[in-house]
Length: 135
Length: 381
Image (cartoon, rainbow over all chains, first blue to last red; front, side, top):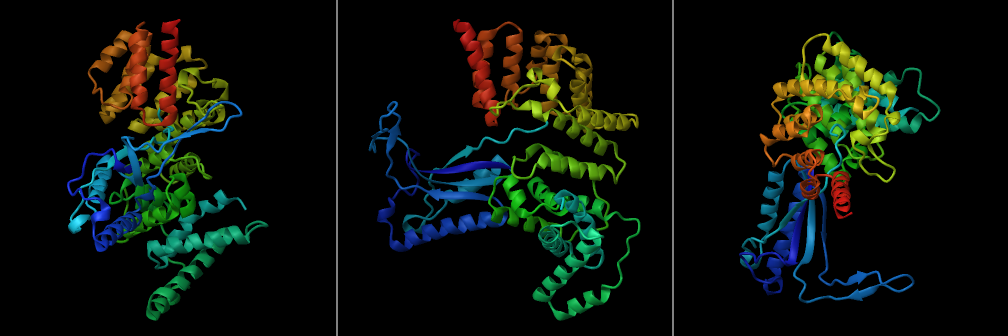
């Protein structure tokens, strides 16, 4: 088994096919979208492939060390930042192909007009554990 | 109470319940429940007959579950059946459980989880922690696996090869949780080797023992990977090595070579060298030739190329590497190593950095990054 991160972007991914911002959907469409995500996670729990799912608020602050005894420096948010993470799902699956298949299904979540969003999701492998019998 | 001693009884107790008429899934659940009770209730030591106690309690748990779940009629049938202990003739229940849990209809991950629970007696929580997934996910994986094998007859002979592949995965792929799954894999393979005379079972056991013997030396204090050539060999466990070599030799004399015996032979040759310079690379290459002939595995060919580089010089190693697919895991790392040995640190540094970017684990990535950094520092100096 291998773990993969399915990463959803607010910004930074190519534009989806059904590219209507969520605040332009009907309330029912928003609910249908949320239900689809919950059902998807529940189904993966049932197949023994679910690890974690989290959503992030868009507000972010950059922080860095500024030297001994000084408070950290903060900056941002930067409106022009290319990449903005919206959330993720972590799955534990038999193969890379299975990870792609599941990402494809997640990308079919309904949006405006009840039609699939065709959203681009980023699939990233986790580092694995060092195998014992390979050195 | 020694928990691992208790767990050794698990497969046999499941077997007794199945022979009394319980289906496998229900029997397995009942034995888990009985185990929990045993761990709680035996603080001052086990009863006179721990197995008998477990059978009695597990059977009671099973009947409770049947009572809760299904019709009264089924329960009465089973209660009537209870006085007979069931046939316990020639069939080895524990062995049957190994076959069932590694059944070819299961995916590798399901077979691993089911084996650890039903043969190993680990709890779902322990298995979930060992594989870094939520307990609910692991519970589903196990119950799906049980449904998959529900129709498999318990007394069918199984395939030893699939069992060995599952045990090899358990040994190789666990994380370090509160249960040492590599040690658990050795325990299960040892138990299997005691029940069945099979050269490859012995080969796998030897392979595990020989690798496990080196484990203390494979990781530095800061968690870094220590490659074989740099390991402090005084930290190798000589008792495990001696046992591994004995097990392997007893298997090899039967002259039915298989891939696990060949891999174990390579591990034994490394274990046999008191210093890295003493390593018998010529013999190691010969064993890789056997391994390639047995498996036709590209990974074996890659490892063989590295061994050729040691036996016949880096040029020969690079030539052996040339015929392989550069997309193979560790191909670039092997190329970097051979280039450096061939006196080309510039190329080697570039290849090490490239290999680090495609490493599959963090210790490996960090090791390769340090190799690149070491060469680059030398080139600057």
